[in-house]
Amino acid sequence: MVVNVAAIPGDDRDADGRSDVSDASSTTAGSETNVASTANNKSKAQAGGSSSSSGSASPVEKKRRTSTVSTSASSTASSTSSSRPGAIKANVSAAAEKQKVTCLSDIELTDETAQRSEYHFGYFGLLDKFILPLLRDKRDLPMVYLQLNIINFLWPLALAVLYTGNVYLGIAYLPIALLGFMERFILMLHFASHRKVFKNEFLSGFALYFIAPFFGIPPGAYYLHHIIMHHGENNHGLDTSETESYHREGVFGFLKYWLRFLVGLSIELPVYALRTGRVGWFFFFWVCMGSWASVIAACWKFFTPTGTIFVWIAPHFLALSAMALGNYAQHVFVDPDSPSNNYTLSYNCLNVGTNQTTFNDGYHILHHIFPRLHWSELPRKFATSLREHKSNRALTFRNIHFFDVGVLVLTGQIEKLAREHYVFLDEKGIRREQDKSGVDSKDKRSLEEEVPTVADVTRDLYRRLTFIPPYSRKID
Image (tube, rainbow, N blue to C red; front, side, top):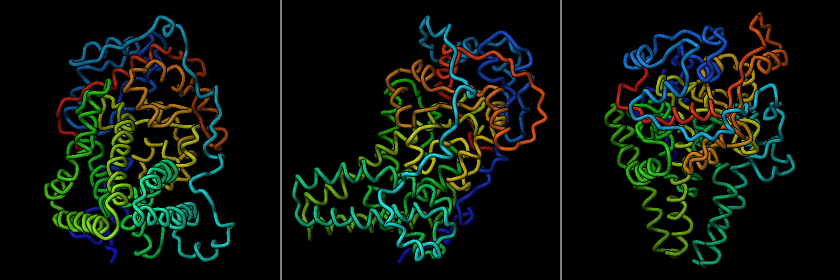
């Protein structure tokens, strides 16, 4: 029997898992200036263009703002960074001091019109008339196709591996499952957990309980981990997958994070449920884990140990490792001056093919602000909220996705990230997108502004890797 996650006792979220801290009203707008104004001793108008701080910032954060951040255009990213305890010294080349970064006006936004590739085959549309009446939103048809692809193709292969225990078949199975389906499925599960796909509760829970274990995710655990904990705590405090308390430059911080994610999360997750008064979720978690372990034990005994390792055990450790790197990379850049601002605790990745296979997962800032916004609307929402992104100093990258950003950070290639992938949200580009969207902008800001150099952005990225000491991270 599939349990309706919305009805589990002890959960104070609504059926779609949205909590108050995930709302757009929970973000803080920060009075700090953007990269261009902090990195260049020019353009006083830049400093006045920032929005005022909202009352949702924690007291510690407000103190930080008044003590370490100057709102005048004369403050520089390097001086701000160097004055902070534990700040990371930026490694910047001489060439980076002269080279300007890419501007929004230099590129076209392509994600909204790009062809979708979330599923491998669509059954020639023959099933549409049966599937569409079952859906809450017909735009989620690609999610159903992906689930059917897994059931029709991957499940028979998994059964063959379990039954035969053939090592070569198992070696062939892993890359097919992990490279061909895993990322697609996890992101499908991600968005389907925020917005139910089917009208029927059993069908809505099918992926969470019956498909997820084939990708190493214990049944039911994803909802507690991602919806209730990660979005509820918003990468702060009680979120056991938070990144703020790690030294995020180089590999050692990630190794600690990875070990905690891989080993400790199965203990910390139910403890989190108890600490937050979700007793029902605590017991439900162990019921799910016990059921999952029983299936693995049964396959080990009645099928083959080798097949069990390839189908159940190896994907578990590989999937957790991939999810650890993914979440770490998504939240590797956290502004120490405004850590509870949704615009500065992550970043957006645009114009990259991975967005077409992961339901526009690259728009992670917007996802934290609007967690229940339909995945197909994220590129358009980005284009119409560029002004908010700019005033809040949000980071934007192009032609790269989270895993690749994570690799560049772990290998110390921050300057390469700034040079080849950073996008400066210039006034000219913002005005162009506003015109395309039909936004009646009465903004009279000058289109002439100082574009930051690669060195400016590199220093700011290093600053956002700074370890954030413990404080009350829960948004007020």
